[in-house]
Length: 339
Image (cartoon, rainbow, N blue to C red; front, side):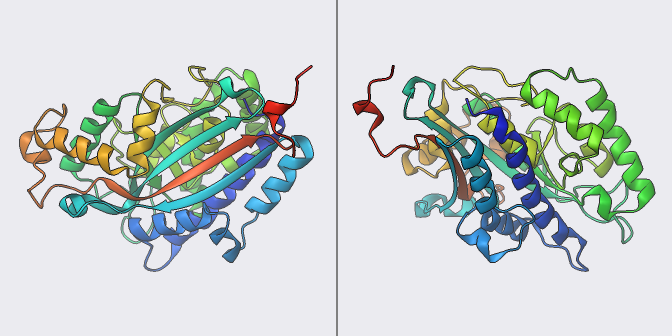
């Protein structure tokens, strides 16, 4: 379990990443999903991130962490995957795997690893502007069925949508007011308990920017429809990027339920989920074989036939790994007697 003192710095860091990516939707020609995801991957790699000017960068985050939790360090990295030629047509640059790993060198039984697969969708303008009824017009029914099939194969809500939308402070004032109202209805219905709940209450009172996200995480079963519906689900069935990332790392020991971490993955099948998210060849080809043989529920035979070039790609070209390590000492914990 990570200390609650680092909750606020982590929210600020991941919110700064959110803001940097979402701003690319405001260009005359907005970034498409592959470009947005590529930028997100740059910003989620602690080496590449230094090329940008984030309001709260990873170096500042790590300094803050060291002040309040000297045994803890957080590392963020990107891995690019290579797949067998037989499945190369199923690789997508838009989507990504994300792996969370917590290592406690002093209490190893509390260590855990788990993963998600994120399917990217961006909002499109309506008549030249971002309005409440603006939609995610790159929707693909076959792709959605494929995601549902994968989710059922891996279980524990492994597959999620990563929605790219403009932040409310960058759209018309009347549109922003409605978006925030839809969001606040859900926040008001929450029970402000535990560390995350208390922080959510404080953020709502101060009007914090983490509640105005441009990156939203929502379960695969909820196909995105519009700008207003995306914000209407916040803190109900979806989470801002900053809250999703922070809540996932604060998940604690395996099996612990996390308030506000919606559809938390279970730990039982974590190794398989992590292997798929990281592009492990054996795991990937096994999953493709299952889908191709029509054993993957939730998709029709036409949707999952691998030889069919119309099949939407679903293998992530890259994965993000967020690693939290509790150690902080030069001595080997195994050689020190805990008193």
